Amino acid sequence: MTLNPYLLFNGDCQEAFQLYRDLLDGRIDFMQTFDGSPACDDVPFEWYDKILHVRLVAGNNVLMGSDAPPGRYSRPAGMSVALMLDTATDAERVFDALSEEGNVQMPMEETFWAERFGMLTDRFGIPWMVNGAMKQLATD
Image (cartoon, rainbow, N blue to C red):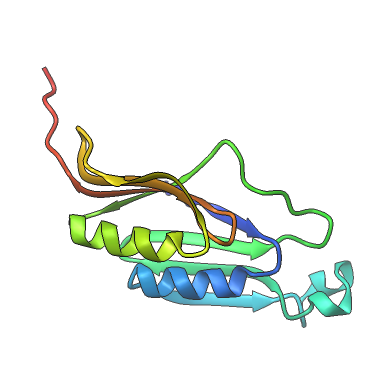
């Protein structure tokens, strides 16, 4: 079994996934616009170049998404994409890039579980929790 986040956007899915691809050193292995698909009948002509489905692979992880058809988008609430990076430096780099034009809820700082942790909503409206260099926690 796999569990993969599926993110919905308000017309800027392609831009978001190009950023995520670059930040996560991933590859987009599938990207389909509404144009030429059976779903093109369900959206206005201006929406044909928007993303019907995209799949990003980064390591063993998969992130998927699409542009919600007009009138069906709502900002994500009650969830965050949790990202665990191996180093504090990588966490800082990704956090800084995601927070550009976004909204930081918790600045990047040390916590009891990670050398670096921060929370933000990126400029595309996606909430993130960025962890870097996880600490070994006692389990007794």
